[in-house]
Amino acid sequence: MIVTGLLCGALLGFVMQRGRFCLTGGFRDMYLTKDNRMFYALLIAISVQSIGVFALIQMGLIQFQAGEFNWLATILGSFIFGIGIILAGGCATGTWYRAGEGLIGSWMALFGYMGMSAVMKSGALSPVNNSLKGISTPTNSIPATFGLSVWPFIALLALITIFLVVKQLRKPKVFIPSLPPKRKGLNHLLFEKRWHPFVTAILVGLVALLAWPLSEATGRMSGLGITTPSANILQYLVTGDGDKYLNWGVFLVLGIFLGSFIAAKGSREFRFRAPDAKTAVSSFSGGILMGFGASWAGGCSIGNGLVMTAMMTWQGWVSLFFMILGTWAASYFVYVRPRASAKKKAAVYQTTTA
Image (cartoon, rainbow, N blue to C red; front, side, top):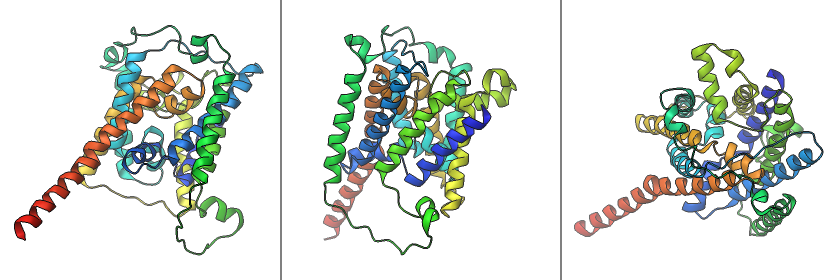
C-alpha cells in the first residue's frame, strides 16, 4: 500500500509539475483569454482513463459502482470549490504539487483545504456535509440512465476530443523564444524541455488509469482522489487511528508532493517563495472554500473533474460544469472587475488633468 501509493502519487506529481498541468489556470483562461488548450488537455486525460478503466472492468480486473447522484450537493459544492481554487491559486492537486515547489502560499491553501475537509467529514460540520445527501437520484451512471452500453458514450467523448485537439493543433503556432539547451538526452527531456499540455494530459490519463488496479489491490475501490485522503492525514495526526485513516489515498497525495519536489529540484525550479499578506489570506481562505466545496460535491477537480467524468457519471460532468462556472464567477470579481475599475479611474484622471 505504501509503495504503490507513493509511486503512483510521485508519478502524478512529477508529470503535473513538469507539464504545468493546472486546471485552475485552464478554467480561468477559458474566460479571461478564450484559451481552451488546458480544457482540451483535460478531455484527453478523461478519454484515456475512460477507455482504459472500462476495458479493465470488462475484463473483470476491477470493479466500479456509480451509486447515487447527490445532485444538489454536487452543484452547490462544485460552484463553491470553483470559487475557492481561484482564491487559492490552484486546485486540490495543484496545491499539493505547487507546495512541492516551495510555494508558501500553496502550503497555506493546503492547510485550509485539509482542515476544512476534515471538519466537514468527521468534525463539527459533518451534519452540514450530510445535510443535502438525501436530495438525490438513484442512478448516477449516464449510460444506465438511458439503458445503453457505456461504449457509445466513450466513443462520442473520444471523437469530440480528437476533433477539438486537431482543430487546436492546426492553429498557427506562436513562436516562444527560448535559451539554448544546457542538458542532453533524457536529462533534457525530463527536466529542461517544455512539455506540451496534450502530451502531459496523456501521461496524466495513464497515471489515473494505473491508480485503479493499484488502489483496488489494497481494498480501496476507487481511482485517484485528493479530498478525502487530504482530510485523512489530518484526522490521523489528531486521532492516531492508523487503521481507520491510513490508506492508499493518503500515500497517493504524499507521493504527489514528493514527485513534484523531485521534478522541481531536477529542473532547478524549487525555491521557497513567501506571499504578501493579502495573498496569504486569499490562499488560506481559498483552501477553506476548496475543502468545504469538495466535501459537499463528493470530489474535487481530480475526483470529480477527471475520475468521475471518465466513469461517465452525472456527478462528474455536472460537477465539472459548475466548477468551471465557479472559477468564472470568481475570476470576474478577482480579475475582470478590478481591471475595469482601474481603467475607469485612469480615464477619469486623464480627463481631469487634461
